[in-house]
Image (cartoon, rainbow, N blue to C red):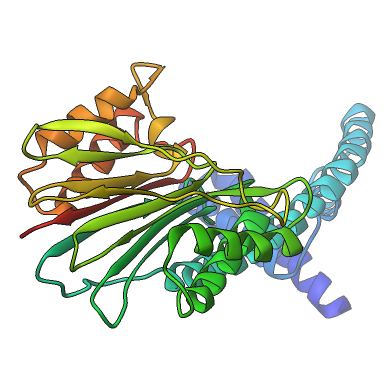
Length: 337
């Protein structure tokens, strides 16, 4: 240890001597290299100041008393600075560790969501879901049963961060289990609600809309648990209507019934489900109106469903200067034939 200190002392002495004599750029370069050596040896700021004073007193004759006293003051300043700096370094290292863990969790969360086409001749689905932060409180779902009927859903956990993301994971696993038993919208939401009510904190709740498309009758049934209303587009009339159903949010009470509604989809008609991260987007500082969202969709209705949702997301993201204020999920189910 003493040899290490002596080596640093001699190195600094040679470097300072060279600089005082020549004031060259080469000496400044050595100073930069020496700083790396200091970091490797974990030298504190006050140790560096003390080293400089010791070497300087050896090189310079009869330093003025005020100069020496000023170094005493500087040492005290560096002691406080060094403590704060080391605390900052510790917090930064911890933050990097947390960021790394969150990145892993975010990748795992993304893997829970459905991906890929359903490979259906008469239906196409497009979906975009982007978290405002690393973790998302939004959940979307689509699946087909053995009769090629299709279930779709969008849910929004009212909360942020890891607790919201964990709740989203709970919804996913509940959906996987319950849809094996029923795809009836009202019954499904009632079952999901019982799971949620038993497993989330009192200050959290979840909104959700679930719909079921019957491939034989082309009837779309749906129910809502306090979720943001979607849209239904009528191709023949070229009109948008609200897709709205009343129902209590998930998790408030275990004894809730959810009424389902029905509508018929003709060729070209489509359903739009969304989270409030879409309706809370801002254009020119103002919240976007629902008729503006419908207008954006109408402009792009000639595109495949996936292209529609992708382009709308990019437009709204750009309008907000690429800074989402909330998780953004937009899903379209369209009858093709």
